[in-house]
Amino acid sequence: MKRFLAKSDPVMETTKRAKPRRLSLIIPAYNEAEVIEQAIREADDALGRLADEFEIIVVDDGSRDKTADIVERLRQQHRNVRLLRHPENRGYGAALRTGFQAARFDLVAFTDADCQFYLDDLSNLIALADRFPIVAGYRVGRQDSRLRCFLSRGYNWLARLLLGTRVCDVDCALKVFRRNTLQQILPQSTGFFVNTEMFARARKLGLPVVQHGVRHRPRLKGRSKVSLSDIPRTLLALIPFWWAQLLR
Image 1: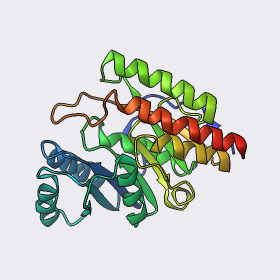
Image 2 (image 1 turned 120 degrees about the vertical axis):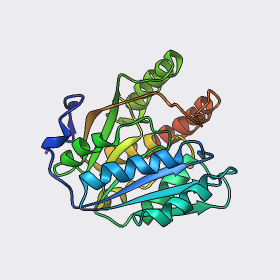
Image 3 (image 1 turned 30 degrees about the vertical axis):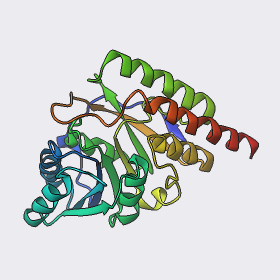
């Protein structure tokens, strides 16, 4: 089997995809009170069509607003919703790791709480997970600012060059993993370097990866937790990680 497969068609018909049996969806959330209810309801609606069994694990990463209260209320209405809480803000990577470790089902996916993805597109990623242990989405028609898209392209180029991440959009927040594979690449990073770290570990282990296009839409509520100040912090994580890999 090839370790890397070229991009699939950007958007495929979800109605042609067979239903997976069991899926865990991780949603890290930090101060997302304005949008978390929509995120959960969209996830519950989509996964109800795509999976025979599923769970939605919201990891509240020390939010100071009503995020956890809203999730707790929805948990009473939707039996598939679980709430995990960090007593303080630990970072995006730490929230993902908490969710990954708590996942119960055969396939594990994650997305952000900002509702910028159409979760029906998970159908295409799940279908590819029958053949590939790691399936990475990449954003088609990305709805972010020109500056953010420019910086993202540069970062992806650097990550491929130094760490061999192999994907064109490493930070796209729509991915599916087989659970047994995920356990081999659990991240140590607590911040936004988390995706780069996981894909670098996957390359080192020779794990097959495929990428597939997913639709993207603007954030309509709440505020992005990614800022320009995160760029130097992520680079400061990338360079030492690359150097450590080189020394090994």
